[in-house]
Length: 535
Image (cartoon, rainbow, N blue to C red; front, side, top):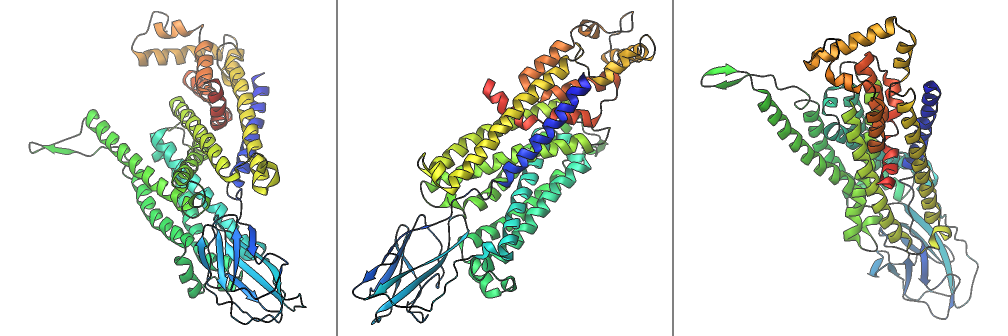
């Protein structure tokens, strides 16, 4: 029966990962681009006299270059003076040359919205009477070409790299300190740093072409690069690179001095002596505290490099929206990045450094906190961006947001089902043991009982209190009640139960498999949502 349950848990794990991946993939593009909401003269208008300027009003503040707005006469000749101004709010103006003749004029614009995406469009107006025009203006942006594809890929990779790097480091410091010495965890965090650094460099080089020409050949145009460095997005990318240098130092200490045990000698009264356990513990605590503070500052700074260059920095309440956006990104990293580190540790950690139940329980609490922060910040961001209930169905941003809400609901459903299955795993044979222990019992009075007695004798010797039957008083009391504590842990911790059951098997039978532990533990992040409902 437990084999069937384990198979279903494995299916739930795969489904959870698929939905989580879709949720992460949808995190970046769920944003509302700027849109032209009005102009003077209006689209298709016919005016009696030539206006002195053309004004454009957008749905949000935008970034403009000197030639972001162009006004062309019927023959395609430019008749504006360039250098558009921003007299107020989201309205932008460009002055026109004097003495313009009658005819149809074309206004073309290519601007950058608050989420750093380019937006292009065009409209016409006429002076005196409409006329034929030879002007043909493309409203396509770099999003539609190879530069847009590469830039979008760089955005996804940078988000993923940040989540893996920050979440993996948080898992080590907050949940499993022994993981600092595990090669697989080290490679995971370093890979996240490399991905984020490489993607940030690529975004900086692609930025000029992405917002202007859309040509790959302009990637190494130093003039465009200089213009990018003067923009808000360019400054954010440079700041991110500087913070990544600090992150490299943090990672070096985390997997260097922090991972090594304090075994060196100290000198006292002219004689060498080894530090006591208390001194080593105090030194470790001090280093942990320092790394936690430094890592939090660096991670928050990296998250702020997104917040300061995208929607949070514009519109309503930017002073509140930017810190909220930082918390949102940090919560995603702690949840999904921590889950990734937990899976890597369960499957790839060496046998002499297993992931213990306490580590999984700590991650369960961390994931629960992350889900709470995600929900709170997500509600605020949705309210700030949409502004009305009808926007959920009337705008593309609202529709994509509904998809994200649906994915979160699926995660909560998976958490609920996974929690029931892991509880059944704990109660499957009435003792809280899994298949390995069942197989031992099926051997009758042979190897099963013999191994069980030997393991109990070993545990009793370790506790220092062996009774006449070779079993300690503690184990004698637990002989008939192992299932209840396991089930209790499942009710209190959720994800901890699966790994708790398998860790108990490792203590009693000495052979819990990493795959089995992973099946019951992978639902940790999602089950945090279910824990929140019951709390």
